[in-house]
View 1 (cartoon, rainbow, N blue to C red):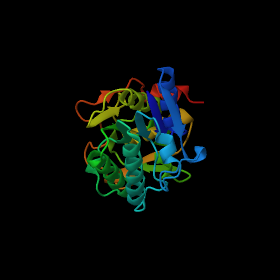
View 2: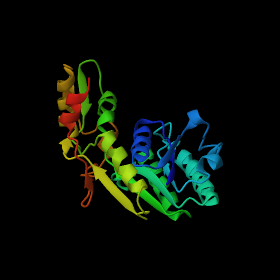
View 3: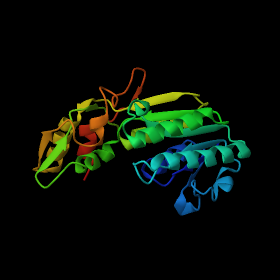
Length: 246
């Protein structure tokens, strides 16, 4: 198949392209750097010409109240172009529990993206992943100073980006789900515990203080960041992944 991967040069997209190409598909990466702009629609028709599948891995440049407009515009442009090109399957990467955190503007925006896809003219699949291992240090930085990192005790079930890429590629190579596939890592951690594990592995002497009002994920209720029943559980454990980092 010919598979157009929008956001195909990023963390997930570049790995998805490689997996699809190894499997024998004509996977083509597209991004701003290759001349494709989902916001303006520039280059989109050319990118989708002859494509059987389009995978959308593009992301809003901000996580604030501007993000819904980004997803509204980019999804409208994508689906219109995909319909014109006769694309038979559209795949989007989203977030586990995204529709259960209305207090977060970015989660509302991603829910909007899903809703636009579901209501659109192209058969679809949604892959929802938990938080990436690669983003844990960024999460710690949100509420950190020189001596302390404040984190809530919210449970989450992080996943390696490579495992997310495999899940997206698997769905892209199959028939449209017309629904959602959830994917997550094999272990559940309290976020404050995950912070302590990460700092220790890095030789970072800062102290993690449990603060259930700290950071974006303080707004996440209950087990919303944990994989629901029926999710695909990826193989890579967090400590194993940490041990491979330089």
